[in-house]
Amino acid sequence: MDIYCNEQHDMIRQTVREFAEMEIQPKAQALDDKEEFSPELTRKIGEIGLFGMLVPNKYGGQGMDVLSYIIAVEELARVDGSQAATVAAHNSLGIGPILKFGSREQKEKYLPELCTGEHLWAFGLTETEAGSDSRGSKTNAKLVKGEWVINGSKTFITNGSSDMNIGVTVQAITNVHSDGRKEISTIIVERGTEGFTSQTMHGKMMWRASDTSQLFFDDCKVPRKNILGKRGNGSKIMLSTLDSGRLSIAAMGLGCAQGAYERALAYSKERKQFGRPIARFQVISFKLADMAMKIELARNLLYKACWLKQKRKPFGMEAAMAKLYCSEIAKEVADEAVQIHGGYGLMKEYDVERFYRDQRLLQIGEGTSEIQRLVIARQILK
Figure 1 (cartoon, rainbow, N blue to C red):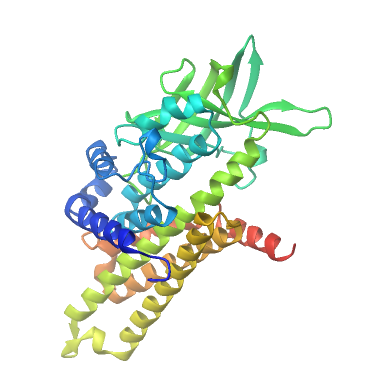
Figure 2: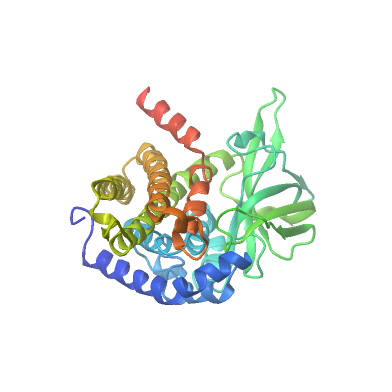
């Protein structure tokens, strides 16, 4: 990947890979079994500088480029999707909108403490009746005596309910015009605000060690100045946030595929049938060859999208392509990895069982595969 990578990227990959293998790998299975979010691991991730990687130094961040961040997420996902999800959601959905659209006061107030690993921030978009159709949102905010009064709820929100969470950016309807058009805005709500409560969601098939939550707003009052960006620009902020977030979800798909492939390759060299390692049978070696090829193609596509963003070129279509392709490749590679493991691939003691479950969300979260195809189709038909 010399086309896009330099020595700094190689160093980040090595650093995060070593950390993930030494600190996360030994705990990943137990945390998955218990469906337990780990503040300890999250703080350690913060200590090596993976929160606020794209935030300028003056706000407490690392001031790195997009590809550095994507490589970090990829390497975490190579070991554990749950920890990668915590990092991806906090950086892309939590920090991202504040960094890009926040006022100077908001940036100075929130960003420094969000770059340490001690605190997390969430982005409240999805509702029970509003997912792909984000404008179907029912959460509303009314301006009353200089305060926003918010009512509604959000669901499937990452990093929204653990004790490390200190706030959320909420998308809400702030006005309905006479012709029925909705004015949508984004508003900052700090944890502890009266009328704002959260609840952890359990019983997940995947990312069982990440914090997924429901958020509730019952006459929740916040100052007028808590609006993020311009009033009425909520949809624009949301779409911009998702464009960037798709890169990190793509990185999770790429990392998941890489991890599943490596485990299948190692197992195929050890497992013997008919007197020789199964890797020596053409049917298995061809599976491995296809897996390696798909991963290489996915990595090239994702890194190109990152390069476009870093160069401030249009990257929305490429981000959608990368998110779609990396998600689909994660599905295909994880499935083949289980097949190569045979019956053992269905047992929790083998990592590929967890990888097989974790990849399933990638085709749904931050825009389904169907929505990605819609985004791409709109671009090519312009």
